[in-house]
Length: 297
Image 1 (cartoon, helix red, strand yellow):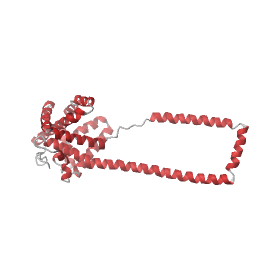
Image 2: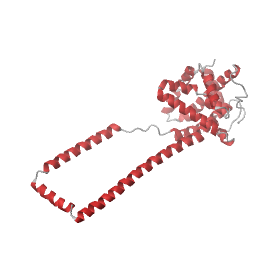
Image 3: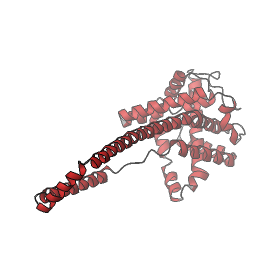
Image 4: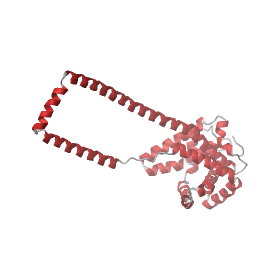
């Protein structure tokens, strides 16, 4: 049975041995994460909009009441008669006709413009999802391959792109897409099941970094097996970094960039290495399915 102290001690030894490369890898991944996963926290102030709308409605009511009162003024009635005569003269009718045509065309193109904006927004969102799946997901897998690899061998920063070099990125990228999708759906159902599923799928990214060709269902099956009985301990392992995260916030992220992020990633790599070894010893998998990380695939 693993302990947090053991994992962290091994993790510090590993990432410090290739400290510069580990920091650069984390910077690349976290910058790409900010690009592909950012922008979902924006909110709209509906209360303020509602108040503004109500105020405008009140102003309109006052204006209408004043106009109604003035309607009983004789001078106002005389003015209204002249307006009626001007409005329904030949020139007035022509002017109203062209005004009607102009407004109709304007409203038509306004509707089309809004539809175009909606379509463009949907296309941009879809493009963002596709780019995240085909670019960011393979790099996440490459990052895990890097931190598993430095446990046994020298690694280069460029190794995080190994899936692109071998043209094996589509299948594992789609698998990670389903991981995100299923986790989101469970979270929308209830928060606690979403958290549980997050930890059940925790090892899939590492399994794919070791064997990108593995079947999607088998990757889910392996991860669930490895995490069986480990969810609470892994959750506590995550909580153990809270102090470091607070210190990182105080230093405007500097501690996170130069220490916490590679430290955390190396710790997760040690956790996977431990659970992987247990799965092999129990006969649930073997070295043919999980061949290791001594060399880049």
